[in-house]
Image (tube, rainbow, N blue to C red; front, side):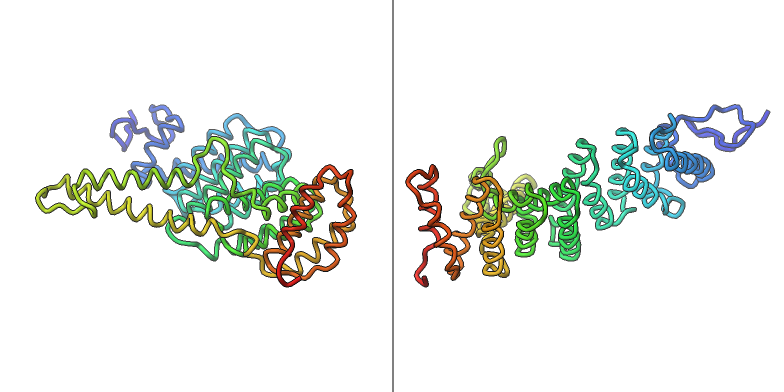
Length: 387
């Protein structure tokens, strides 16, 4: 009888004529992780089968074979064990998702995104390439997929900037968002702008370029984006959200933990000469980490209090363009009030000379005006000593 060369428990013989049954994909995945070199031939056979199914899905994206999704999960999990063999896999999956996302089945779309994220975590996909692709996929009509893309984009950019600011990645993505805001797809531009505002709120992209990119949405062709940019520049992003602890409460909790550790160690700085030992040294290290955390969070809180309105590169040009947009605007009165509010803040904060703005406000200062108190507040807000 034919004997298998591989005789370890749980393994199988991949050669033809063997009496051993072929293992399931989950079993094979576990075996490949333990001994990648021993299963190169079997993995190559499964990969060729998957590539043929992938070509079939590209030709007929409306329906996928029954074994396509299990094989997709298998090859994405073991791809890091065979980097040369699987080098073309990420590009093929990304191209299929980006080009055929409207006609693919929802389960296939989600599985492709999950596989790309897994390959990114294993280091087989550059972060910039995948994030740019995710921004482009915001235009898809699958609401569930857009929500997953949004959550991944925010989380991955935050993780990439956790230890140190990745300026090349940030600049490339911000320039990419500028082009997306000018595209005809309002859905893709909406999610891209929403992601930028969320990253600003989370202290990840808290710089002048982010503010100016969001301010450029004031003149984009999509009304919803213009309203979102107005709310952002008026400071709506700094308001605490429901279900989330405010930054002040989190900072107070961290400071309370530092005080508790100091009391346990019996000193202001955690030093106590009469209590040596491994437990004390461990608590000292924990105290030092907590002190560093509270110091960095205090600095972030101080930076957060700096209004986005003061980070604009050219507030006078922005005010002139916004005032011209206001004069020919046919938006509802609530939106025009937001524009007047932003203009008055720009004039007052940057000491701008916008003489036609005050005569324009006089047309609304009538006794029958319902929002007369708000308009008077905006008028006072725009006054400064150089007028």
